[in-house]
Image 1 (cartoon, rainbow, N blue to C red):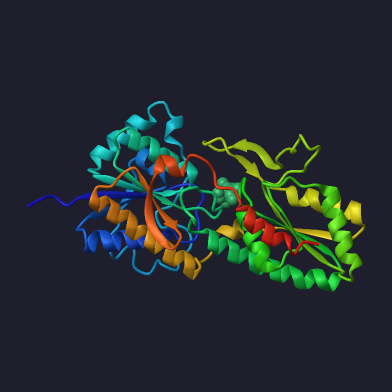
Image 2: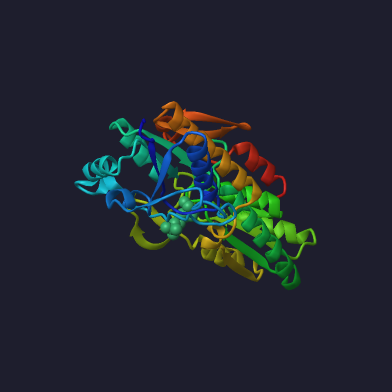
Length: 351
Ligand code: F6P
């Protein structure tokens, strides 16, 4: 009798809704159709460094589709930061008897996967992040859930802004791109949207708010992405606003707080009372939307099918409405910034 193929799966980086949908799909199709044994590697790359795993059977993934987060946990561990990290990973892959690996994550987790593939590990990537900033796929799962949380928050902020004749600044995540801000801003009817791709000209911003109020509106909603910066001069696009001075193992800074500065500038420049809401990790919590459940499911099925075909070094991707595969290295070559056409649509409603 031939030995069952053993496939390891891990979730790395910031969690997001839809991760459990991927796990469920990989196990269902992997076990039932392909006869694989699936092993869950705990806490992303940390679990592979420390050989911390759990079996993932059909029973383990039952009832998890609607749950946010990830049942196999996550971390921002970078094995390339350790002197013997890659050696340990390769040794543990062998000792655990893993024939292939499915890595579910954003640019960092998939960056490690891509390098490991070049070193001979059979790996497939699944694109996850609320930021939607990965090239090589039109959408990452988690993004739609975050956008829905932000849209609801903007709706709620609208009624209180209107009652008090206030300007409300809503700060959202998205790292160095404005996807969440622009899509949720359009959906929530934001009056201005500030994103990393377009440094903030505070005079133009205040002029737009004043113009809007001179037309009889007595409140405004300003959505600002955490990675937005103030334009100082045309040649100086300002500095990032950070929560603290820490960086993670991939060198990322802790963004946050730009909303407070924008609010101060607006109040100073317009005289309108201004309040700030920083949505933070609420955007990553809770149940996935139907879209993310379906996208996570489609990605999970496609990834385990890649393993069955022996197609490695690839990332599954949503291109148009089809699930395709793209080389990991290509998908990670550059971040995906906001589509300028989408921003132009948002701009129609500014001021
Ligand atoms: O990449 C997802 C994300 O939520 C970003 O939008 C945000 O900048 C970052 O992660 C926050 O990371 P942490 O959960 O480590 O604070």
